[in-house]
Image 1 (cartoon, helix red, strand yellow):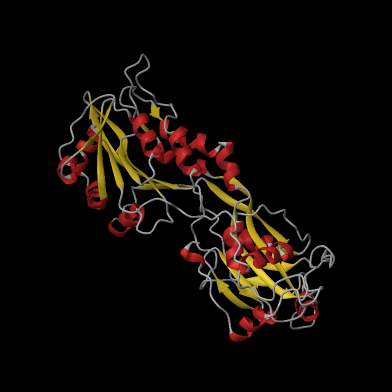
Image 2: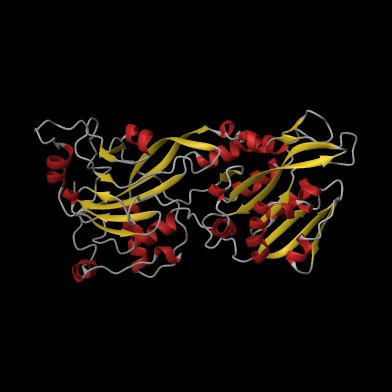
Amino acid sequence: MPSSLKISRFTAAGILLASLPLLSCQSDNVPYDTEHLAEYHVLTEEQETTDLPNNQLALYVDYSNCIANGLTSPFYQKMVSPLTAATTEYWSIKGNRITRESGSVYSLLNNVQEENYAALDAAIEQMADREAESVMLTDGELFTQTATKNNPNNPYMHAAFKKWLLKGHDIHIIAEPYQETYKKHTFDKKRFYIIFTDDRLSGNIYDRIKEVVHLEDHPQIDEFHLSGNYPWSVPTNGQHSHPNDIVAATISSYGPMEIQEWQVDWKNITTLIMNGTDENGTPLPHGEKLIGGLRINKNAFGSYRITALDIRVSSINSAYFDLYNRLEAGDRINRPTLTPNPINNFIIADPDEFKKHGNIDLYFDIDNFAPDPETELNGHPFNYFKIEILIKDLENILDNNIDMFHFASIVNAGQTNESISESLKNCVFDPELLNRLKGKVLYTIYVKSDKY
């Protein structure tokens, strides 16, 4: 079990309840406690973890004038400082040769000389195939020894970007403008720092760069982020949500999941929360807020903005009861296949609050609230249900940032090289990547409540 989901023991009263025989009364069809609820989550849900190792950074260097002239750039010098310290593998891209070099990284970077026809397409693919972090320093301009030679609109990085993102990792691209002279003409180019990492990895190379390089001090620098995961904390303050005081919840937090134990009965919940009024006694349109203190970073995925959320509620009475008894009996548990038991028209989120502020305020669906005590809230003496907050829809915002990846072609006067931007566009419109994000669960709340 992941260390982030360590199981804790509860109070003496809880242990006493747990010691009671579960089948002492035929009507009792759920466990008395949440003792194994965190284990239930681990065994039944796909866990968002990263298996990338620390301290195995590969640095890929495009042997071009872009890098050779980097020593004249104060920004470049700051960027390569954390890279030099962290690099364990140095790979040179010299023409079509991608070679692992030995020696001092600092010395190697200070002795880069121009070599034509850098195999950037092969190098970026090699980075995507790695199971560790990597960074490429390049001008992004792919030349091949073919009839076309220049590739100003070739999305040659798309496949590699997609492969890395489908693994659930992150890509950060930093673009530094600079000027390059070619055949007595000066061109506005970009020096790219392409970072393959995972923002969930402690001490990842992007975080190490940010400790040294403060991008806000360099207004000429552009940055873009692509992500295949949601690494940000959802609770706004502390480690968990803020349920309404009326339910008198005790809460256990486990990162992207929490367990709430409500201490009041449904009669009081109905009277005081669903039928809540303002200070003048006027009924509130959705009753009192049930759960707050949750917020989503709508721009977490870089090229997409989260525009709508879904709230999915499921009864887990039967499934948790079965798993609990098997764990208590010491059975070996494989990942079970569960059939969802949805509770419809139960809990909703305030769409206006999310749209304006990114906050997730949960309310009972008082206009349609009618859970079935026979098939949904059918637990005795308790009910166990799961609230999932997931992505319903996203909008593409890549066009707001795409210009940062354009640069002047040095072989075709007046032409713009859009190869990197085209690679990103192909990622954004790729249905596999979009489907990976839609329906993604961002946060889960398990609730133990009284019988209904």
